Every structure is written in structure tokens, then in C-alpha cells.
Image (cartoon, rainbow, N blue to C red; front, side, top):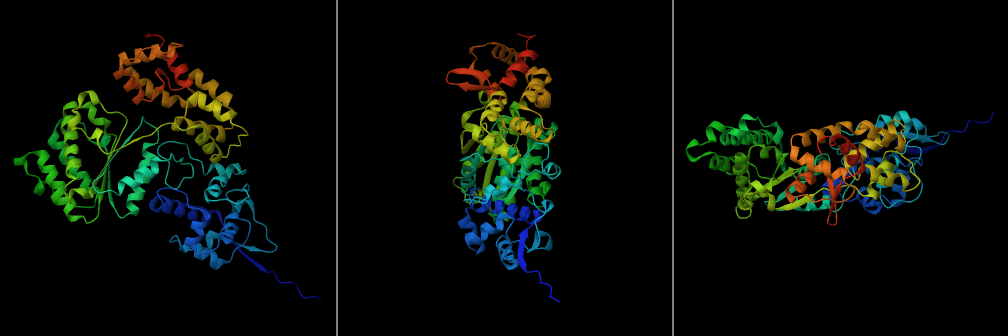
Length: 472
């Protein structure tokens, strides 16, 4: 009787769990050590101490590699290989669809693991894809392959945050990607060993915004809490010298003095202060003084300030007492057509030409939130672009909550609403005074075409043309 042939081991292949873990750590290293730039196969191979040929086999997901090699790759990113991270591949085995994130991975050679990251989302198994595609609400998570970089902004903020006593100002209308960029900046800072405190100004009580002493005590308490330090406000606060000097001494001589590493202090949504002009003047003047101290005082240089906002009421602020004209300015703009097509591919949409991206861009512009919402519904509900646009023009459609928010903001400013109503109704450019143009731009409602001022996109023209028709 002929002896039975033993099954020869062909090694192991990455499982969906292992692939996701490895991708997340590679992304974290790129953010922390490479200014957000993708690592090439050569760089990855060098870090993992394997050849690019072996790495290509590993990333192909259909060719086995030695288990020791896989362990080596994981350990290069401080990961411990577990049995869930790989599947043993035998000569008689075939990789099952349920074991992979994608069946459509391209086989051509790639200069970066990024193409694997993108192509892994081109998945013909709808159920599996749906579980990976959340509704686009809020910032894009750190480990999400749906984050679209906007060079050179990421590299600029990573380079600036390592400078002593730096100030970074991130400005854009709401839902343009400020929070997503901020997440990555904070992750990068933490990788450098910096301490971070992220304060959302909309969490400050209204009562505190009418009393500077209460505001600064609340501010200092929150910073201390996020840094893991006992606030001891009553012990450290000196009412005799006033709240501004007390807060400055508190930060310098209490918080910064007992922390050896730099501190990144984020003030998010500072627009809230403009509802309280007197407080805004005093608070922003104090911030400005801290930034100036950081240029000469070694202890203050540990403080790195990041201010995030949609608009600054420059008409009401003394330019010499404001933090809005110092530091690195970052202005987030809209996606371009190439970025939209890239994001569509990451959503698993197989657009064969630039026709679809051009149609979508003409309808909603390159507004990141509107683009993300569009792609989500195009992918998850299999709507056509024509159906999507028709419903949106009729009643707001999938964009209704975004449009309602803007509509409420316009209703609070009747003069501005009337101006915008005239703008969307007119087929040619009309004169808009600079202050109103600035406010409309801060809301993201207009775009500039040379000397012309136009609605940002056809969606806004159609929707607000109807909503504002009664007041024009």
C-alpha cells in the first residue's frame, strides 16, 4: 500500500485581524516619526529586517511566509504575534474569502504599503464591508484608512509642534477636517513624549464666560486635571494680584515647573468667546502674553499652544493684543478632484472615469463632510448620483442636517441672510461688503473666483435660493 503523502507546510498568511493591527501600527509610526509621510517598501523592509521581496509576499496575502518572519515584522512595530494574526497555509489549502478584508488586492508591485491599505477596502463582500464603514459623523479616527491627507499641512504642523514655545492656529469652517487633523497632531505630540491637554471651549459654563476670574480658575483646573496634576487652586490662587497674574503664575510656577516634558495645550472652538466680547478681549490678550513669554522664558517654552477656530471677529479685537496674528497659520480648504477620487476608491466605489467625481464636485464642491456623506450613501445604499442630487434639491436629502445648521445660523443674522439670499438668486456676481463676505466665508457658504463672490456649490445655491426667497 502506497504511503500517504504528508501535507507540506507552505507557511502563514496574514489574517484580517493581523492585517488591521499591523496597518494601524505602521500608520502610527508614520505619523510620529515620518511627519505623516508614507513609508516605502524599502524603509519598511529595513525596519523589519527583511527583504522587499519577502515583504511583498507578506502583503500579497496569498503567498505564505515563515512564521518567524511574520513575528519579526510584528516585533518591529512593538506588536506581539498571536494566533489570531495569521492563518496557516498548506499546500492543499485555499484562502477563504472570510479570512481577508479584500479579494480584489492588486498584484502589481507597489512603492508603499498604502496601496494595500486602500485596496483592502475594495471588498465585494458587502456584509463585511458594511461593518467597516461607519456613518461619517465627527473626526476620522486615527486608525481609519478613510483619512485623506492634505499636503503639506500635516507635515507643517508636525514640524512646528517640535519647536520650543510654538503657536499653531488651525482655522476652517465647521466640518472641514479640523478635528481630524488635530487628532493626528496630538498623536504625534504624544509619540514625542509630550503631555497634552485638549480643552473644548463649548464645555465652559456660560456663567464662567461673564466673569474672568471664574473663567481662568475653570481653565486652570481643567488643564491641571488633564495633565494628571492635583489642581490645588485655593492654595495657589492669589486674589490680591488679580486673576490674570494668578493664572500666569499658576501655569508657570505650578504646572510647567513640575513637568519635565513640553506641554501641548489645545484650545478648541475658541469661537465661543466671541459671544462675550469683553471676556474675549481680556482672555485673548492673556494668551498673547503667554505666547510672547514663550519666546524668551525657558520655562514658558515648554508650553506649545494650538488654537482651533472657524472665525475670528477681527473687527472687535486689538490686533496687538490678539493671538490670531502670530504663530503658524493653518487654513483647511476643500478636497480637490484627485482627493475625492481617492476617497471614493477607499469606499469601494468603482468609478471608471472622472465623470462621477466631476458631477459630485460641481454639486457639493470639495467640502469634506458633504463628500464623505455622499460617498457613504452611494456605497451603503447603492444610490446613483442623479438620485442623490434630485432628492437633495427637493428637501435637503442626505445633507438636510448640515443644511439646517447653516440655515439656523443665517436666521440669527437677518442682514447676512438677506445678502446671501441676493447672492444665490443672482446669476452674476454682486457686491458684498468685506465684513459680510468674511462672515459668509467663515461659514463656508461662499467661494472666491478672482474678484467674483459665488455660492460655494450648487447645493447651497438651490437650497438657500428656495429658503431665502421670502426675505429677498
